[in-house]
Length: 407
View 1: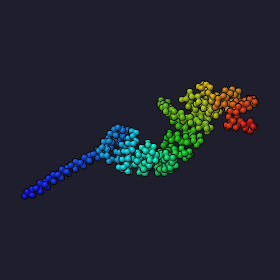
View 2: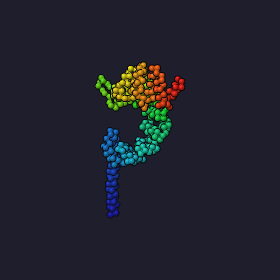
View 3: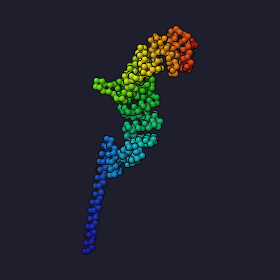
View 4: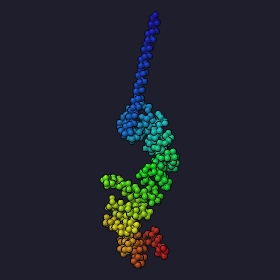
């Protein structure tokens, strides 16, 4: 009887212990489930805050997330991105490494590891990480551009172009891929190929200003002056004051407009479209009234267009703004010569024969003035001085040939 009672007591005790153990296990499991759920809530909140630029709040929540569950790869990823934003690349690299160790298919983690490697100037390592990210997500444009950028940094531009062209076949409407390939081609001096891609990108981007500017400079580098002038004229036209609504363009846009007008004018001059160059310089003088150099350039364009009186006016304006300006005097002399005032032109050119940059040209034009006036001995003397100043230039060779009886 005693033995039976003892067995029953032991069994009851064991049952009680089992009940307690099960209860403790359930409590532990419930706590773990809550921590995981809490971690996911904190992660979602931190991601939203990161997206809104609330980095301090995001960091607080992501730390709490990791305290609750340190095995969440996305949490380590976000923490790494926050550390990158704070300029803490070494710590960021550690968090990002944990993220990809927990999930080796986390392509964004590999991408950000590439970012931190670039900050350490570890180009090869950055390329490896970017390439891993692109392998996992082949159509992610950010990854593709990062790989192309590191190819260029490794001085492998042909590899960058090849890869970008392959991706363009898969994603033919992706503007940034065309621009990246065109930029690389332009740096290699392959301007015609670059221009074709820029034009394709412009059609897709609805005439994006930055792409149009790149196309314009591509034409400049390739010596296609007409096309370049047309591009920069259109670009300058986008920055006009709207007097009806009293809308004024910003100082930055004014500076950009000035650059476009200057480039358009230069290209117009190069292509012989002097009327268009005059128009560009005329627009420039609206904001550059006190700039003597702009007035001289406008006068040179006017002279090319046969507008001698306008050229003379520009020369006088430039001279009034900068007395003794040799380029203004040279323009004035050319305008006087073109207008048939050879005596005045000779006197004007003689005033700048001591100027280092204009001396040879001034003596040449002085000689031409004397030749037109029939003073051949004085003309010969002026030509000789021009030849002595710069015998090895095109001007010198021309004069030497002329003195020998050539054309």
